[in-house]
Image (cartoon, rainbow, N blue to C red; front, side, top):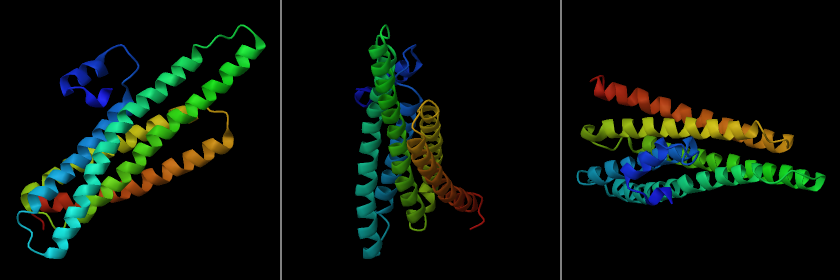
Length: 211
């Protein structure tokens, strides 16, 4: 679907009057770019790394980031599909009592799915950011700025996905579900932001010549 479009076509779709693709899909796309940049940084760095232990570690992390980039692309479509199902549920007939009850039930089911998709995006962002922090000490200074851009994209993906989790929870009636998903998303957000803040500080030191 959207993940298979050319960039120009995707941007045009994003700007259209259609509700999908929307912020959730854009957040997952930002995540994919973040992971892909880290893969690029490591592939370039491998040309200069001589320590065999570091080489093996980077090769493993490259595979991890490549998997994350592909998972983000899948999440671009999953997010849009989940939101489309919410819209479909709202369009169900509500003439009779039975129809109203069925409509309410399907809306709630669809909203839960729409909340879980961006939560998964947040989880993959967290994993990607951890890789960025892990490799910073091994890469040459010439590609440090690319890790910085990756971190910025990851931060956008994280915050965007968090917004999408919370806006869906707002309309879900299941308090237990809301607490579980809300608490989990907030914890992921806080932990990931802590790592992103450390990356930012390290990159500022390097780019400003303080290290």
